[in-house]
Length: 139
Image (cartoon, rainbow, N blue to C red; front, side, top):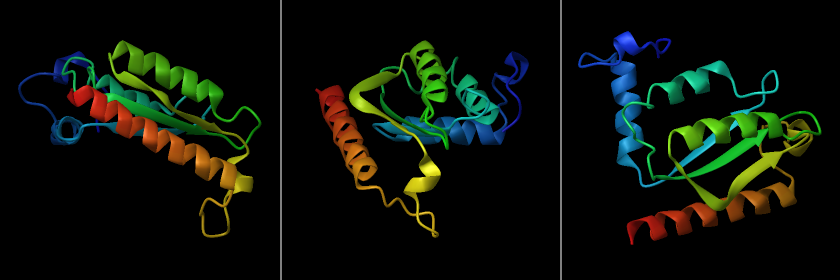
């Protein structure tokens, strides 16, 4: 996806941007997961979200968020940055639909599979919250 610039945000969108917007439009709810990078979300995620400011695919849409970090902060700074951006996009941040995961490397096995039962349970609660948000949004 190209770097966001308002000059490109018109009738002849880059294909990657058009596809990104179509995917977001298609679904009733969205989970956005981000690692923490330099106390924030990675620039590529911010760029992708910048591309939907004017088009509004997340306006009122139920969204759940996950962030993770190898430190004790659990991606909390990335999460705060993500929530701030999603709020600007008027996303419906579902109650209970947020998980931050600290020391993520210690919670994965050699195959990259999540083995920490508390984190697994937290993610199940997140999914339940997103489903409730989608159902409530349809009413």
